[in-house]
Amino acid sequence: MLAAQVLPDHAPLRILIVSDEVNPHGLPAEQLTQPGEISAALAVLPMLNLADSTEALLELPTDQLDAATTRLLRAGSDPLSYDVLVYFAHRIPSGVNGALQQTEFVAAVQHFLAQGGGVVSFHHGIYQLPGKESMQALLGAAATGNVSWNTVSGQRVINVAPGHFITTNGIGYAGQTSYGDPAAGVPSGNYPWFANIPDERYPTLALQPGSGRLQMLFASDYAEGDGTHVLGYTYRQNAWAGQVVMYQPGEYQPQALGPGNNLQVLLNAIVFSHDRVFAQAFETIDCRFSRHLAYCWGKRPF
Image (cartoon, rainbow, N blue to C red; front, side):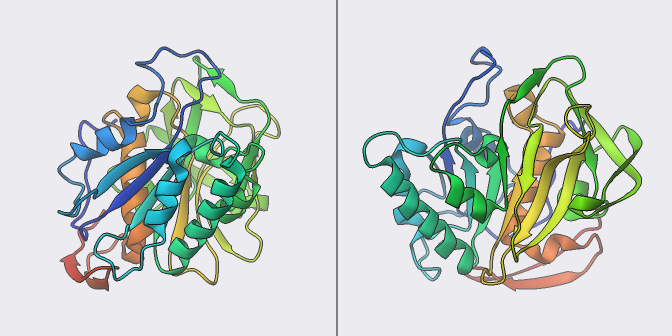
């Protein structure tokens, strides 16, 4: 594991987080990833270039989804519009208007993606409860059924896209393992992995890309179901200028948001979802017109 996180130079970002809590395994507060903790973790990382503007890093609870919707509908030319949405919500808002708020939020996310925003589905954001079906369609997958908590072997996080920025930048691996999932587009071969112990497993996570383009990033091989399990991917629909990145591990807060591989994956996903120029691991000079300004940087080899 790494002692510190690393990122290449990147454009200043405005990040919106939507979050809620679920604790099926009865973890104590210091072990459970909870609302407010993602923004707290990101706020103190000097390598993450946050915009110098009002609410540049804002975390809202699921029950205030209408406030998130309003912000996602801002025009891309608005200096207070957001670049990245981190979706850490396992349910729709509570209350009599919850379903309507969810519908309006999904439409806003669709708008956000169409005009170039990046969406990172983190941990239980990919889990589908009643009312979330249209959101899962935007995310490109849905986790359902029982989830298990494993403190002995957790799950191996297998990098099935070696060389990709998200799977490569700043991440340390323990070894190589044989893996393949042709149905998910992963050819059989030897891939690097790191261990996540303890971890919450999502044995049933079904991809539903439709006509969109989905690239697998991470998988696991624990012996539940058929032994092939989706842990992460990128997803983009033809009508979008932006894209989705999904990463499932995240239940155990010390690993999810403490120094190490999982926080590095989250950081990589945030930067990549907004700036796809980081797709290749080669030194070049890039200029990108972000949603707010033209920004140029020299990329470092990863």
